[in-house]
Every structure is written in C-alpha cells, then in structure tokens.
Image (cartoon, rainbow, N blue to C red; front, side, top):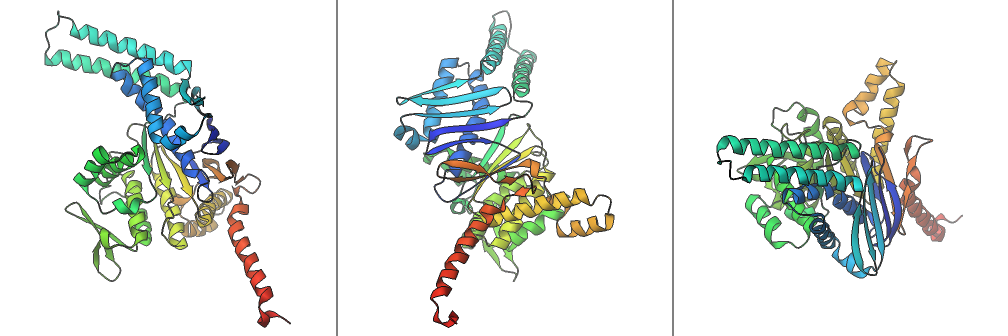
Length: 427
C-alpha cells in the first residue's frame, strides 16, 4: 500500500513524502513539521466527514463547501496569505486534492469515492422513504429494522471505501499538541466546556475532547500488559500515578504526594501524552473500530535525554502491543531518533541471533522484544528550507546518523575554535 502526501507552495513547503506505520518529522523550529502532521490529520478526517455528511442527507456541493470551510478553519492564516498552493493526499486508489488558484480554493477527490458515496446516498434515501411511508405504523420492531438497514448500508459503504484504501483507512485519530502542560491538571467538565465553547483552534478542541476520552479509557490495573509498561511510565514521570476522585497525583520516590498543578514542567508535559498512550491498552479501545492514528508533537518536550530514551521505549512497546496503532511524530530531538535507532538495531540483531538462544536471551535483557521495531515500519524525514529529506539509510538498515551528529559536530567545532584562543592550550 502506498500512502503519500504532496505539498506545493503551502506554508513554504514543497515536498513529497511517503507515510509509514511510524512517520517521524525532525527539523529546526518553523521548518514545517507540524504543518505536515496537521495536513495528514485533516486529510485522514475526510472519510469520517463524508460519512457524517451522507447521514445528514447533504449533497456533494454542500459537502464540498463544508470541507473547504473546515480546511480554512484549520489553516486560516496560511490560506488567507497564499495565492496559489496544491496539496495532494493519496492512499491506495483514493486521492484527495486541495488547490488554491487566484485565491479560489477547491477540492477534488477520486470519482471512486463519489461513486461509492452516491450508492450510499441512494440506498439510505430508499430506506428513509420506505419507513416514512404512511402504510407503516411506527413501532419498535420497525424502528429496529430501519436501524439495522441503515447499519448494513453504512457497513457496505465503509467496506467499499476500505477496499479502495487497500484495507487501511484511519477512522480514529487523536492529536497530542505541543504545549499540553497547561491542560494536564484540568479535569472533566472544564475540558468539555473548553472543547465545546471557547476555543477557536479546531485542533485544540479536538485535542481536549480526545484528552477527556483518554482520561476515561485507562486500562484496568489487572491488565497484564501493564507489567512491562508501568516501570517505563514511572521512570519518565519520576513517580507513581495515582487517581483519586477524578484528580490525578504523583507519588514521588520520597513518598510525597503532589497534584499535577505542583508538578514540574516536564511531568506536566509528559502526563497527557502518557495518558493517551495508556488508553490504547484499554480492552474496550484496543482494536475497536479499526486502525488508530496518534499524532504526537514533541514527545521530548521538557524531559531529560535519558527520559527521552524511555519515552521512545514506551511508544514502541505500546505500538507493538496494540492492534492497528500508527504514529505521526514531530520532534526537534536527535536524542529521540538515536533512541529509536537502538530499538531498530535490536530488532535486526534479534533476527540474526535466532539460532543462538543464549545470545538472544542477553539481547532481550538489554532491549525487550516488546520494544523492538523493524526499520520497514519507519519513515523518517528531515525538514529544512521547505524540503523533506529521507533519513533512512537502507544500506546500514538504520536511521541516518548524519543529522544525529550534526548538532554535536557544530558544538565540537565551536569548542575547538575556543580552545584555539585559549592561552593555556598553546604550546
């Protein structure tokens, strides 16, 4: 299955990328990492919006207009200041394009989508007409039959779309924003109020709504998967998670219990992300309604490099234990890429050591099997000057070290220049 995003002249970006099970964007600030992630999020929401539109009996014109309004809401400042741009998303046989020419925005999508949707509209209209006929007296049996027929029609449409997308459309998404620490101590009704009423940013509203779901969808303490997960969580948070009456606390190593409002910036930033990750271990959510996509901005935010390494281990552990979970990750941190590299290398070694059980046992003590991931699952891109460069070194079978070493090379060069001026180092 090929899944691509092509961007031309949007937010200064001109790139073509292929998506993987775990897609990572790394680069300096303002390089376009979040724009790429948010474009993917918007396009992957297209089919869900289409299904809602059909259920609301909207025609193609109304649906297209609502899509364009929605896109402008997500990217208002860019759309209003860019005269022409083109964005193209493709998965399998499904294709969706957004183009703006002479400040006029339009959306074009595969005739296959339209054909499947037209069949769905015709079928649902027949069902509505059938049960609105005067010859039927409303009763519970007829209502049940109507709901059943609607469900069958929706399932048939979804299966047709599913096949066009090579069996892999995303129906469930969550976007974990950067700057999330401000919301880590908010609870229940406050989150709901903010997500429904006061925020103009639609992505922020989506985040708050999904954050409240994640808080409620935590795995049971008896979940066997937690045995390997909890030590990683406690290593990152430097304490144990405790929930009392919908309030969240940390029990620190010295026994103190603190609320999240009193926690460090790193703990506050990591906490919402960890809740999202843990929610995928919940039995009612794992594998429910097909594939999930989790977007994570700056998983390394405000945490020490050692904790970044553990965060990478936590993400891959949950990725391996969860049915149909994918990641889109944006980061500034070479440490995080180095950590993923170790997990990729461990997977390679595990394959090479299959006939050496003693060595394999040693390997699993260093990197457990549950944290190992094959390179083939990754797509990693360095973003700079509006371009995207693949950082996968297929010859070595690892993420390229060139970007990982660049920051330390510059620092070392500067240190060398300083030493050259130091009288104490002169012969």
